[in-house]
Image (cartoon, rainbow, N blue to C red):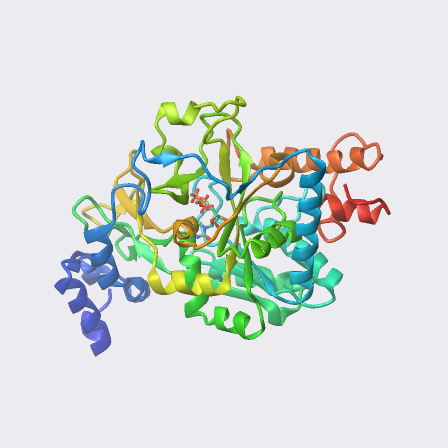
Length: 461
Ligand code: UTP
């Protein structure tokens, strides 16, 4: 049993601050905790920014932050670059590709992969970045992305900064993983792990939830935490000092994505965009992805939950869904704009979740229904604040098959299936007959179809 008298003054001040904020209950099991548990609880408590929590509780709206009211949403405008099968469009895409490649060659692009999430739906205890994804090799997701970056670094003959967003939930395991994998063959000085903040879950009365007698229910503050993480780690200064102008952002759980895509970078730079996105056609009206549209005249990404059933299934003159361009969470972000977002801050969204919590005796109870609220900010809430933007339509089969769930849609099995199908498509279009069964093309050999064709000595598709 720990003696509270063993506390130093800083610990006592910490408890006093919690009491003053009406959160003193966090320490209610203190007298019955062992010394190691007291250390855990104090360490968790030190991470809680009480002033920020109070501010969020006072201001976070029930659903989206700067999101739309149903009815105010309009379809996207000329910011959307649709995929068209015309010769003009093909030329435009080739020009964008060449421009993007030039930016990468000049060292003006860094890659940022968000890997700070808890992977709750997948049920993985390790960070999702460690999930095996190579259909033959079982190569893990983070290594899969890193190899694509390695391909480009080799191609342009210079290191490309590889920034990984981590959180308290993933930081240590990811750092160890990167070391065990010898930095994936990348220049170690240019792999940067930046840590986002965490926020506690609260109950209906706004009281911080304990998951056990000695642990606070802390969760990462959403992928929108990337802006503050870049600023607080000073990695954004380092990148800017080295001439980086564009952050090529994607999320670790989508193995198909072109982690670094010259075409996308090219569209972003040519349009002098501050925040660019990639989209794919939704599978159907009910697919649960955010969609591109306009809110109050400004380009925005609208959460699926904010569309009415009529909006969700509305069809345009060509028979396509009016709100059919789904967000695949790949963005090009201007470095100065990212810094501005870190300074301005983003709104926090509330999500009701099932959070394991301590009962009256301090024992952990698994709730059978949502019992607490978590707070997250989203990387794409920056979009309406961008002076200029572009949305580049991509082919789903080439770029999007995220691993979200253990069963149903968007699982490890569907991602594996889609990877294999993508490789088969590359081979067939290159005049190669794919073998039966699983196949894998190493991302380091060919991160995309252009590279695969080049490997085979063929012209660009
Ligand atoms: P999701 O919102 O799908 O969350 O994140 P998740 O953590 O992967 O899974 P659930 O919701 O707990 O089941 C999409 C991407 O954003 C990253 C994740 O690592 C994933 O790559 N992310 C999410 C962060 O980097 N930080 C966060 O706070 C949340």
